[in-house]
View (tube, rainbow, N blue to C red):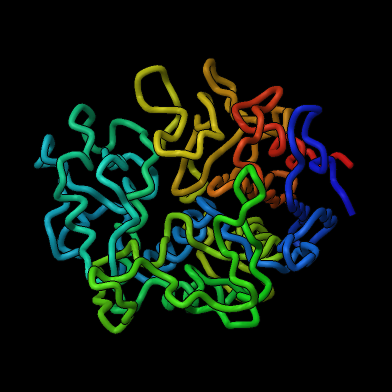
Length: 394
């Protein structure tokens, strides 16, 4: 069981593990597997093994947020400050409200320069947004696209304040349980049996760097408190939306992610269960930003270095649209010019993608581990291994 990603180029090492699942509205149509979920244990990878899927977490978080919009508990275009309980403003543009729509589309004028994830259990996310470094002082909210992870802890904080529920548990209720997906944010709400199937992530030398769980759940799945403790009873709704890593901490299998893709292809419904309204699905996919020479950045500033200029050219609500026919855009890892939408992920040597073609009713999910030094692609701003997994050539 080996896809073309077994060999990315003559000079590149192959992935330690790679999984590719193609699907349509009715189910999986092809599964390709290679390598080991855990090299030391000699445990072969399967399409049911949960991996830290990185920024694809943002897409799944957005599905949860849009459920709350459907229920009238959140408003896409209202000032989020009253929901959060503190004044969320760019100090250079104090009269411009920050809305959920702006956060989800990376147009809120926030940056990652002040940090976004190392907030301890007893810390407050507001300490980050109170730092002027967190803000772009040149561009007003709504006028410029800058991919920033910090947007999504703020979204999670708003979700917690709107419901009174802890983000990871809330996502189980809103998205994962209705879709019958065995997944979790930062391991706490996953079972020990699920954690035992964790996909280990590796550095370029083959040393484990993430999720080397050895069959156990981690002793502390979040950033410890300032005193070193891990007492989750210190959680308060909305104080620290970064706790369960809504921007990148989802552990989900390729088959689970394919169920997310199928639900979106079916306009918000899967197996008789409606998760989102068709209108909310359409809103997610509608580009809120399309690249021009002066309205945004086409590459993530705080990244693993795997993406390159021209990577982002159209973006909706945590939905990236590919194959933009515009100068400066190199956002087509498939190389066929077909418009697909979804999201990419990259962290700790793992590269991933979920892409659906709404016109044909088909999609693909993939990931590869051990690719910290992945070489660039031949025809896009994606890496060579992503181009191969996108095409699925055997």
